[in-house]
Amino acid sequence: MFSPACRFSAVAALAFWSASLSAEVIHAAPDNYRQMISRLKPGDTVLLAPGVYRQGLWIDGQNGRPGKPITLEGVGGRTVFAARPGNDTIVIQDSSYITLRKLEIDGRGLMVNGVRASGRFAHHIVLEDLLIHNLGRHQQLVGISTKCPAWDWEIRRNTVIGAGTGLYLGNSDGHQPFWGGVIEHNLIANTIGYNLQIKHQKPRPRIPGIPLEPRATVIRHNVFSKAAGGSTGPDARPNVLVGHWPLRGPGESDVYLIYGNFFFENPNEALFQGEGRIALYSNLFYSSHGNEFPAVAIQPHNDIPRKVRVFFNTVLHPGTGIRVLPKEGAGESDQRIAGNAVFAKDPILGGIQADNLTAAYAAARDYLRSPFETIGRLSLFPKPGRLERDRLDQHRFSEFPDLDLDFNGRQRDGRFRGAYSGAGSNPGWRLAVELKPRVR
Image (cartoon, rainbow, N blue to C red; front, side):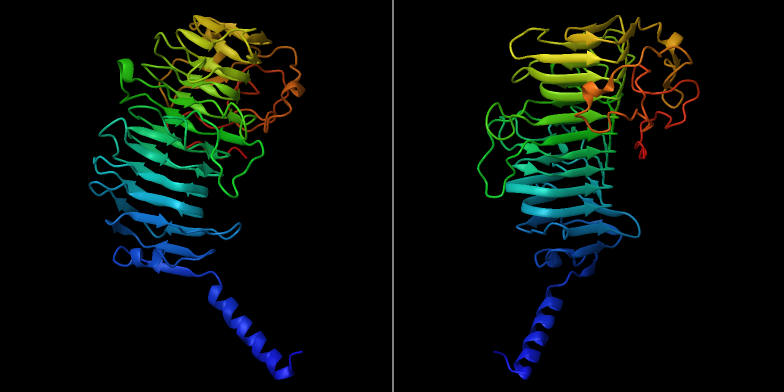
C-alpha cells in the first residue's frame, strides 16, 4: 500500500505524464514545418502559415487515434505546396487518422501527383478543402491517388481542376483496394481522363485491424465536369467509373451509394460507367454531345453488373440515356431502373424498367424549365404538371440512405419522376461548375 507521500508523488507523476502527452497546437511556416512532422502525436494540430512550401509533405508512420487525428491545416491565407521534380507533392504512407485541410497543391506542370497514399496501408484519412491544380501535363498524373489498401477515407469539399485524372483510387491490377470511403461536395473539372475512378478489386489482403464487415462507399453531392480538356479516341474516359467489389471474401457484399451528384458534359465518353453492386439515385446527368456512348452505362468492365438500382435520376442526352448490359435475365444480373426522367433518342435500354418517364431529347423543353441553356442558365427543374405521376412506392428502396431527399435535399414524396421533387421555380442550387453547397 502506498503511503500518503507516495500517493502524492504517483499522482503528480501521472499528471505530468498526461500533460506531456496532451494534444498540442503547433504553428509552423515554410522554413521549419518539416522538422515538426515526425514528432506529432495523436490529437496534435499543425497550423501552417501562408506561404509557399517547396519541400513537399511526407507523412510516414504517423498514426492518430479515433477522435484524436493528427491534423495539418492551412490558416490565414494561401498555404501552397509547390511540386518538385521527381517527387509527388504530398505522400501519406503507413499512416492513419490523418487530416489535411485548407491546403493548395500546385503541380506546376511537372510530372508528379498531388496527394498519393502508399506503403502497407492508409486508413481514416480526411482530405478537406484542398485546391489541386496544374497537374495536367499527362493523363496519368493524378490529383488524389491511393496505391495501398485504403479504407474509411473522407474526401470532402476539394477542388481539382485540370489534372490528368482527378481521383484514382485503387490499382490498375485490382490490388490495393479502396473501400468504405465518403467522397462528397467536391468539384472535379476539365480532367484529361477520369474525374474519378475507383478500380475493381481482387480479394482483399490480410492486414491486422482491417474491417471485414460489408461496407458502403458513398459518392454524393459532387460536381463532375468534362466540358473541356478531355482526351479523345481510345484515350477518352467517362467522368466517373466504378469497378466491381471482390468476388469472394470480405467486400463481396459492399455497395456504391452514388447520389445527389451533377454530371456535366463529356464530348467523348459516358458520364458514368459502373459494374458490380451500385445504387445510383437523385443525380443529374447532362450532356449536349451526341456520341456512341450513353449518359449512364451499366456494363461489364472487369466483371459484370450485379445488384444495380438506378432510380430518381434526371438524364438529358442526345443519344442514349441509360444503357444496361447484360440485359434482364443474364446470369446473376439484377438491374432495376425506376422513377427516372430520361430525355434521349433512346431513353432506356435494358434492365428491369418500371415507372420511368421517357421522351425524346428535343421534348425536354416541354418538361424542364431551361434544358438547352448554357451553364449558369441551365435548369433541369420540372415545369408544373409535367413530371408528376402516380405516387411511386419508395419502400422498395428503403435500404438506401437519403432516398427520401431529392437533389436539392428537399423531402421527396414519390410523385415526381427524376432527381427533383417539385415543380415551377427551383428553390435550390442553380447548376454551375462549382462546389455544390450543402443540401441540409
